[in-house]
Each structure stands twice: as C-alpha cells, then as structure tokens.
Amino acid sequence: MTTSFRVIESTAPRLPILISVPHCGTDFPDEIRHEYKESLIRSPDDTDWFVDQLYDFCPALGITMITAIHSRWVIDLNRDPQSKPLYTDGRIITGLCPTTDFLGNELYVDDRSEVNQGEIDRRLQLYYWPYHHRIKTELEKLKEEFGSVLLWDCHSIRQRVPTIQEGKFPDLILGSADETSASKELINAALHSLGGDRYQLYHNHPFKGGYITRTYGRPDQDIHALQLEMTKLNYMDDSEKNYDPSRAKRIRELLKRTLCLLAESISS
Image (tube, rainbow, N blue to C red; front, side):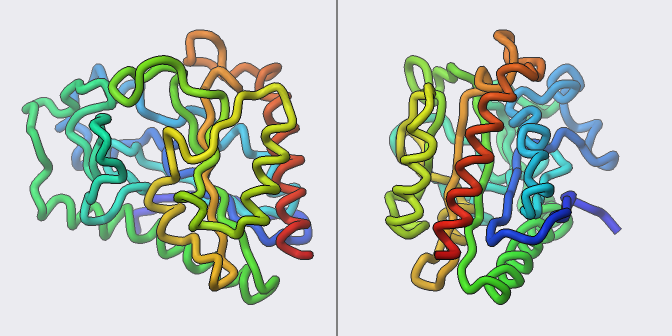
C-alpha cells in the first residue's frame, strides 16, 4: 500500500494540538519520476526544507505531527482538490499538480502545460486524500478528548520570491483566513506570542492560509486552524540550502512557547 505521509505520535500526555507539515516531502514515486526533469527534482526548490525537523520537539510536548513524504510537485496537499486558486491578485500560483515551479520553470521533460485529469485523479486517491483523511481523523480524536482543538499548519519560504511579491517577505506570517479559521482569542494569543520576539510578524499578508487552514478551521465547531509561514533564513543558512542549528534553536524556542501558550488557551 502506498504511504503518502508520516505520523509522528506524541510521546508525552497529549495536548489539544495537531501539527501538519504538507510541503516538506521530497520523494517522487517511481512510476512518474522519469517524467520530471532530473536536474530539478534532484533538489526540488519549492520544498519547505527541514520544517519537519524544525518542529521535531513537538511529540515530546504531547503533540502529534503529520508530515508529507512526496514533493508538492507530485501533488500539493495544501491546494483545493479542484485546483481553485487561493489568491487572485496576480501572483504566480502553482496548482494541485504543478507543471512549473514558483519561478515559472517547466518541471516535466515534455514541458507539458497541464497534468491530465485521469492522472490527477490517480494522485488524489493515492497521495492527497489519505493525508487529509488522517488530519480529519486526528482532529476528531483530539476534539473528542479535549472538546476543542487546534490544527497548526507549518510552512517556510525563501526570503525573496519575486513572482509572488516584490521585496522581502517578513520573518513570520500568521494566516487565519481573514480571522475566520480560529477564534479571536487564539489568534490574538498567537500574535502576542510570535510578535514578542525579534522577528518581524505580519498577519494574513501576503499569505492568509492555504486550503488546509481554510478547510479545517471551524471555530464555531471548536476546531481551530492557523498557518505559520516563515522565511527560511530563520532556521537555514544564508544560501537557504542548509539547516543552521544556531538559528533554528532560537525560532524553536519561540515556537515551543507559542504552542504551549495556545494549548493553555484552548484548555481554559
């Protein structure tokens, strides 16, 4: 059976939080790997490199993690299954099964402009829906245990991606789907914690949260969801290619404080 994700179970008494890392995967299935340009997939540039490693303290806090195995170039777990665009402001938006990277480079050997619907459906069944079904299952279990739960969706991005916006991205961007995916109390608690350090923090700009945040965040049902995007320089070296333990240590401490604070907020 094909496995499209990893689950790292909590190793301490559980907290009412679930971690999702949908863009850390780098694998390409054997049956389609030859269709991609080898020079690009050797190191798929749109990967949220090492984000699963950055958050690997979570199980010891009592937080289960779900992390992707396959590259977002195979199928993007944080896109609408019908490939409806997340934004309409002119930025480049890669689809459910992308054919270019964020810089517009063609991914496939044949330079195709789209993946046919039959192949999209196959990838949905094999790789996409299993990830989402597991998120739903874990959220339901946590809600049954605690009454209220938070899904924290984890992302990173290069400091500069000119096809998305001119200029640098801020250090941290909290996405709450225009304050609809979580309660105001949780949003404010996250903003207070994340904004109390040296990092530049924006809220809902230029990212509001992707499909995962917008779909699972139902605060009226006591299921909250927030997305945290961060620039890779927070935990990688200046080349944005290698994990930097000293930089990562500082941001990990902030993330740990924030998640613990949010767990208390949910439980109170």
